[in-house]
Each structure stands twice: as C-alpha cells, then as structure tokens.
Image 1: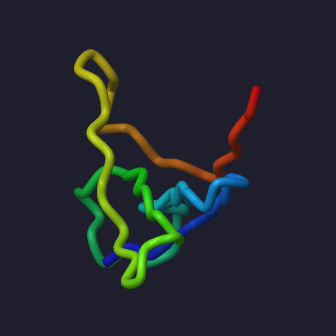
Image 2: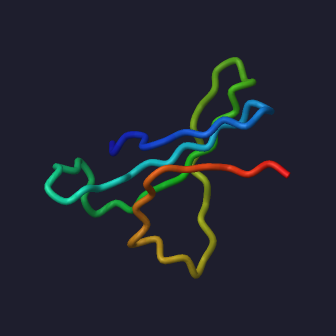
Length: 73
C-alpha cells in the first residue's frame, strides 16, 4: 500500500526492500502503518517479498525508512 522506497540486492540474489516512507505534505495511503523491511530471493522461480520481523524493543511505531544499504564482510 505504501510502496517501496529503496532496494539493495546482495551478490547472492537476496534483495532487501524498504517500504513505508512518509513525507510531510504528501498523501499516504496508510498513514498509521509503520515502515517495513522486506526480503526477496531473486533466485526463486516466482520471487515474493516477505516482511521481516523487527526485534522487540525497537520503536516500530516511528519507523519511517528512507533508503537501505547492506554491508558484506
């Protein structure tokens, strides 16, 4: 409903997608819904985005992701 804000694809084909960015003055289709991070395995025949659970203790209500990046060690 809120669309994807950014995506980062790892060399192994896993894609992390941030969603739910809200800007002041821009209409939101889900104004009370917090942001989310999705994982998609692009190696699958029919890839689907799966919402990742965010750990307890994280302020999910104010989560408003803008961009995403990964670090491979």
